[in-house]
Length: 109
Image (tube, rainbow, N blue to C red; front, side):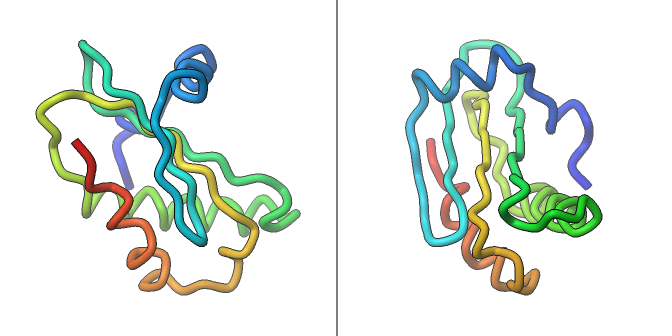
């Protein structure tokens, strides 16, 4: 799993990403990201109850997405704050399908 220091954004940082950040999206994900001056690249993941009402299912999806990020994101020259929003149609997708959808979105500079 992605280390905790890489997967924690404060609420004020998330708000700043939504206000000033750029967006990339596809059928399953929306990525909001903002290049920052100092610090390291950090991720936040938002999975709503529309995906599934059971927390165990949402947590399984969360763990899979964080593992995809850990294995595939590149160490960018500049640090970014990244918020990943998950669409409800992700529920019945396999790990490989999630990886195919998310990896192209992680390639930005």
